[in-house]
Length: 261
Image 1: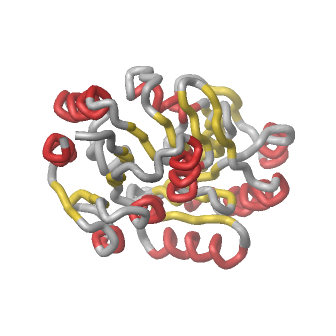
Image 2: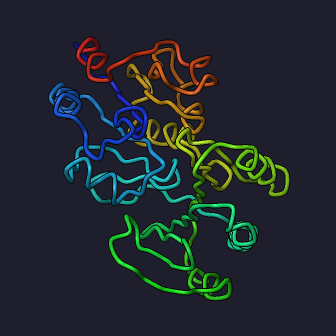
């Protein structure tokens, strides 16, 4: 049948709202891809550590994490894309100034993701409190010697304020990428910090650009990779702008995978 490349987003694409882990059927679909000696890539705004965990520490998966700013295979960092440091600090200062309008600010480095929320910093997944009652100077000091690869903000609803923040980021900061991630998150990345550029890097790195490519996504941050193939899929409840791009829609990811193979 021949090798294929399957690239999938997680939240809203293979993992539905309210789900913490993949359904049995979705896991079987992932297993089928690898059994067919095809390439399985997960492209998500999540951290690498989180993706590695929910994929059961599978080293055969190629992880395009942090919206493409971190690419990992077999526990080896293949690529890191980070902000010019002062630009990241300027964005953090702006977000701090409007923190009362936000639920959370999430700042990612290649090794950790830190929440600023209600004057606290939490480790990724909020497993333990790192710092409490930290002010802006403390926040900046914490990241002084760290590479920042992505900044995200979370609001409880996509209201006018949400889109004003989105527009302000696009207007006031050049050479960055801003995405509506379709789940009340706004993701902010360095230039070329997107899933499409990351996917092209992986295809060239593994010399597999000639293989059939199937891409699955539901949010604005998936559009850059959906446009790379005619075999592009989105769930029926994806953003309208994604539906306009994708060539196919589906209700169950696993059904598509088993039809492909």
